[in-house]
Each structure stands twice: as C-alpha cells, then as structure tokens.
Image (tube, rainbow, N blue to C red):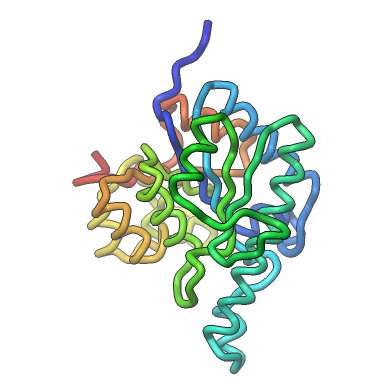
Length: 243
C-alpha cells in the first residue's frame, strides 16, 4: 500500500556540518551518501523536495569577520562554500539515479544554473531535486534565512530543519540533562525565548508566510521520511503554541 505523505512540497535545510560527519569539517562521502538515500526515499513517495545546505563545514563568515576580516567578504566566501556542498550532494544523488538541479544566487553558469523561481518550481514539478546554493546572494544573511525565503518563494508546505538534536529544547541538552524538549511551540515563543531554532529573520519569514518548521534529528536514518509521513518526531514550530 502506498503511504500518503503529509506534505507535497518541502524545503530541507541542512547545515554544512551535517555533511562533515564526526570530523566536524570537510565532506564525509559516507554521510553525504546516507543523506542522498534518505532524500531518494522521500522522492519515491511523490514529494517535491528542495534543499538548502550551509557551508559551515568549510567556512563560516561570522568566524572570519570575528578575526578581523571584512564581514561582506567573509560572507561571500561562505556562500561559495555552500556551492561546494551543493555539488557534493548533487553528485551523491545522481549516483542513485536521482535527477538534480543546483541553482545558485551568485551566477556561476559553468557549475550551476542561476536561481530563477519559476524554473525551480518547474524542476520540482518534473520530479527533480533542486539544491539552492550561495545563500541569498547577499552578505549578512544566513542560510537559515535563505531556506525560509526559498520556502516562501516556491510555496513550500513545510520547512524541515535537520539538526544534531531531537528537537527544540528550553536549554542546551548537551549541557543541561534536565532540558525540556518541546513537541510543539509557537513562532513568537521561539523569538521571545531566543531559542536559537533559526535566526530571528528566518523565523519571522516563516511566521509571516505561515510556513511551519519541523526541527528534527538528522543523525537517525529515515527521520526525513518519518517527518514527511506525519510521524510525531522532533518539534513543530508553528502558530500559537505550534498549532
């Protein structure tokens, strides 16, 4: 029996660190292959999936600027790092027979298409995975904000925020073993409590466009599929109290 997904079109936000595995830097081919296989599983459900990947496993603009580098220059370097990750994920997906298009906010036609909203939607409707690279193309904006922006632009049903934790907590669970995990929480509650689900700009964009956010543990194989099928894992960030 064909399982019915809860969401038709999704944006999956991956951190750059998610591609690095235990090393914490660089790209781990085994980890990238695992992510690719999970995305392929979701495609088989008939779901349209776009991916935004960070670049923190290679370069962080904020880290560069904190050491005296010009912030805009540091951020542009970070955008280029996201393209490297996008190409790595594209390669892994194609090895599994998945059709992929990488679109970048900074034009580099030799390696990817320029970001064009209508073209991205057309690719998704044809069953391609679309990977958005180079952030928004502007410094001072995070890849979380990129994911929220692209989710609004392509009219995604939900934004999936893959993390190293099981969801959103009221404190850092790695520091405080008594930290409470929320099953659901409102956008405003996240912003007021400064819970660091995403940066405030990204959270506000999702709130203004009524895009729910599901925060879940990427390290458990199959969690992407479970979330899309509507299983209650992770934390739902939505309207009042997450509803």
